[in-house]
Length: 463
Image (cartoon, rainbow, N blue to C red; front, side):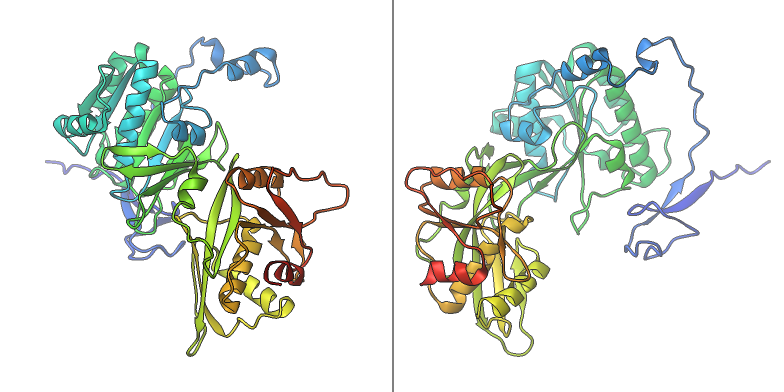
């Protein structure tokens, strides 16, 4: 009797997609540990027969018809303004969104609240869970107040069953939610759920369903220990949007960001607070981040960071201590290499001997400052801790710091100044900007103070 021929396979790194000759503990290409997995080679692709669909014919991209179809594509708001903000206004029909985040951060809670809001507004929503039973999901929906007649629950780990249930209601289906892609498997793919072959096959079928029926699909993805989405990076290239749900155990604040969005900006930020009855949207994040701020604290400075179209006022805290040996640089929420640069500038151009001390920097609220506009605030917080003098009450610092000690004006300074005035701050320290630039607005009760160099800024706040 002839022996059955074993299906061809190969070893692939799920981090960089490199193909290697066998299993390695560490990928020889990207040096990622534990990322090599065996992948069964797929069979020959099915032959595609082209029909007479007029939408498949090439058209001029600048034509009026094509522009009208794009402009009139109705987005589907999910009822959570913070989620819609990050998505660019809502879910786009036919799009596939991948939501990632660490375990226990609230991905399923966010997904269930968003699906319930969409069910109230747009029609029938199918929520497919591969991790929980229908009773478990229904119990959480009752606790969150997310139960609705248009929200249908399905507990199944077979992608064929999920797509069959969605196809039965494709004509009136507002969206399909799948939690999560690592627990769903395809019958015609080799391996256990969660391996490279299974994930690729499952996501390919979900994308095909979304494009064919113009139904938005939202899929939850697990993350690795270093915060990266688990599975091949090919997933992030195939989907239309990648959302990251962030937070930590020490704060109830949750942040939603878009690392990829084909239909909107990736600079927007959604802010939530985790409570016993679910996630609550924070419409005014600046007030929430500054609610527990201590007035007159040494080593504290306020800055305004732009997160998409929204200015956020954040508190930067600094603490300097005597160093025993090599000075430490511990930074939370800011780039350590940029802090090292600011310390050198402060030492050389500000006359503050801080290079021989331990420096600890923290951005309150778990938010990360990624733009140079916060340079002056970080520098002033360090100087305040070094001199053990509090900064003037009601001060907001906005400027980029150069290596020669000069201050440069930040982009969209008008929106930052208006936000500072709205929250009751009395003084904004900012760079003068180029000659001929438009003057900044002056909200009532807000004084705008200009400084061109580091030494000038220090003199204005401490002397």
